[in-house]
Length: 168
Image (cartoon, rainbow, N blue to C red; front, side, top):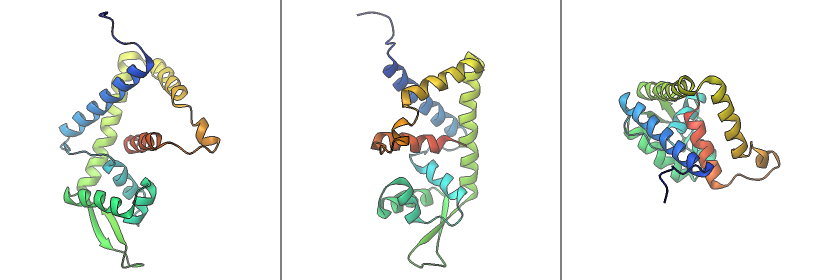
């Protein structure tokens, strides 16, 4: 047994992802949002991008059933992030509207993501961060499979949703 830390790429990536998530969670908790759950941020961003978004639209975008999407929306509604109103076009559908709390959350999410990136750039330098991003793109496959028409695995889809959740 050695005192040397594990230096494999896989271990470093797992630790980096865990640290990134912890950092985001802490910054969001400090901003007053301790109850963050996946994929709520992504759904809120979808609502911000499309004012006529329905529960069915969320299910399709996340690749889940309408029932699953309804469960996510119920949680968002319970936490005061969305209002749900009947659709004028289809009474069976519900339209989601962001609340001021959701707008504040989305701002805090962008600021937390930027704070982590700024800290990294300050600690290792902009050039090194760009190199890191290039290296991670290589590890990720640089979307080669998707360009070739290969469907993403459930794990890759989940990671893409996480990435979308934390993007501006």
